Image (cartoon, rainbow, N blue to C red; front, side):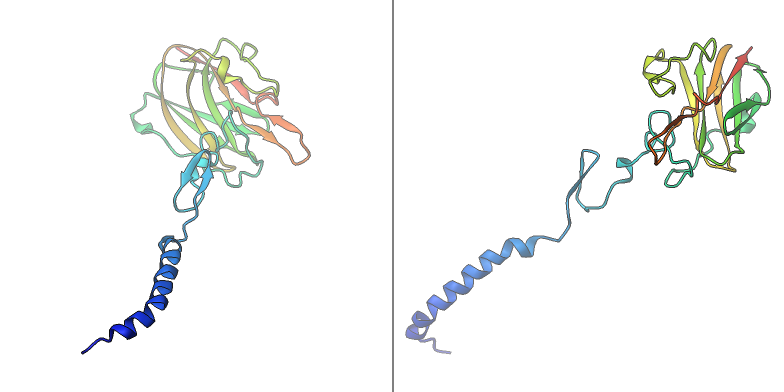
Length: 208
């Protein structure tokens, strides 16, 4: 096939305009449409909100956060450890507004705590080394101020126990005095604050 130089010269301006148009369109074509948004200070390439950016331990019904009274959007408590391997078991019942252990004394060592939520709101059982409930440091809302506890005071917790749920965890408890606390703080639609500890959700446990 014979190409005409004259024809090419006459078409060259059109070809240059077409090439320039493709160059301008190239960045848009290279964009896959994914939206980057900030979630809890981290960027997500997919544009979807990361679950870790919501309440987790902090987003779940823990003392450091807030919880919905209905438990909506709060992950349920998960069992931890094998109760069959524990040397003792303690049943703890929570409701509005109390924590009632099945015994006031348990032997030291591996202890399975089986928490039962018989109430209508989400609760938790936080295990804290303490001489008494009155000795627990409080914040302005009446909740336990965990930042003022000794570094090793918090032993563990069964958190976000849903209404009607039973959740079990195994803890290694040395001899001493412990407080069982629900440290959830709820903020009601009218702005009222309900600190479960302030409303009576605490009990003492002696480990021998």
